[in-house]
Length: 175
Ligand code: FEO
Image (cartoon, rainbow, N blue to C red; front, side, top):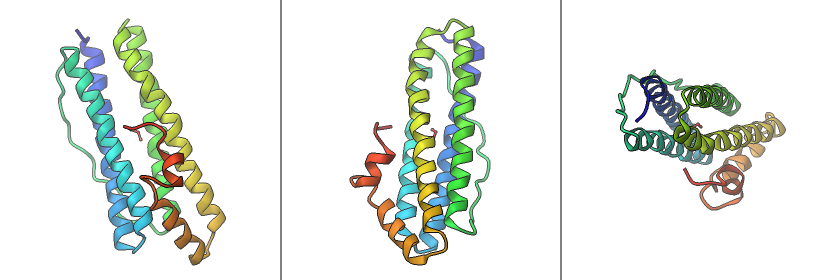
């Protein structure tokens, strides 16, 4: 049985994962409208991953006899002056998620909740990948600078996520 403290913290994490999903989906919509389908596809794939993260926590909660309580999701940022701004937003979001996962792990340890600690180890590893992948795209965007040709090439590269080189960099593990 899960303690009330861990239950509440897990519910907050579920909300954060859905908030991340919403933020990525808003960025996907922005890039679709800006005729950058590769960036949009990358953001949409990330949206799907965040939903999977939330559901992983959702399942753990119910496996342990807890109860999920869904809270309101804040409105995400919808427009970005340049592609780098959207990825900077993503990096900030991932750093926030990482800190939250670490706090959750520390809480589970304090509460002697071994099952939750084990479950969270997957998230700790996943966050290393998440931050690395966003950081890599930011590096590429810096290299592209103000060159529209370079940005279009990068758009094409990111659009390959789901089977191409970007996939290998972006998603070593499903979820
Ligand atoms: Fe679920 Fe991108 O953290």
